Length: 367
Image 1 (spheres, rainbow, N blue to C red):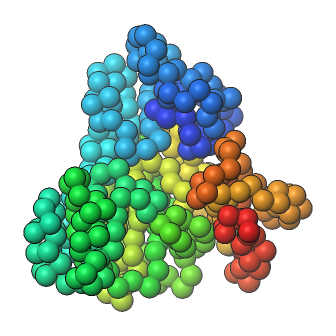
Image 2 (image 1 turned 60 degrees about the vertical axis):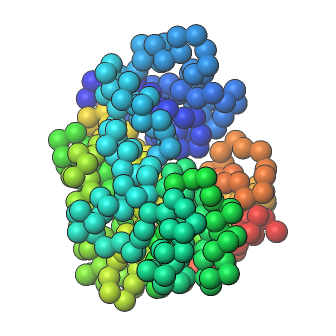
């Protein structure tokens, strides 16, 4: 428990919330990010990579390093590893930032996924459509997030437009999964291999962006809950992962199907800031700093997270609601931008849904 200085590659809202969670634990934070103004800039020193000897200055100020995004440069992480520990490690980053590598890892572990094919030419896209059957989802193998870098091919006539949109990138074609809902499971693993798993969340998306997460997922069978926890523990152990990891899942009649993983704290886990005894952000800081892991159990029987999208909206309406908690990221308004979130904690599902309904304007860019 001697680590006191954490370096974060990135200075966005995830870094901000890690710092807010770690500061009461007497942890200091240094951010490595080019932005002059960022959500994290008031919570610790920001070192800009373009500055002379920036990396050396960053490493002198930290005992351990983590990152906000799976799109972090693996070469940078491997270089840092020579001087200070980086958690999660390069393997977690490498497998999660490339969809083909990720899918093959799932298959290796016996985790169900959609059928998929690698696509580098238009002819390969046509072959994939014939082999997998339509509809299919065509995605870039790297850098896609929040619905970016993908196109749906519903009928043969869509092939040309999908190819024109994404050509020039290495691509993966995935068979459509017939699912009833999207779920996610978040877990944390420390340097000794101890793990804690959060309740499975049910997630509502629109235009590829997460809008609402509910915990626990409604009417999730014990069998599927066990399956979700088994899947994520297999991934954690196989990668020797340290820190928080998220696994996104499709709920199907035949069980859970893995969509993708994120080696970091995750939007669908923001509910844990008030809804769990130990938030995902505090869990991550504890794990990478060799502190005992906290409890991932819920404080109350129901919780939710509502993303604030595009516009800030009527903040007073949130502040006037007893069981609602407002988190803003210090960002300027912009269409489809995540500006903050609202957490709800409730004693009943009925109360939760009533509260969610009262805040739907925030989900829909505040009207």
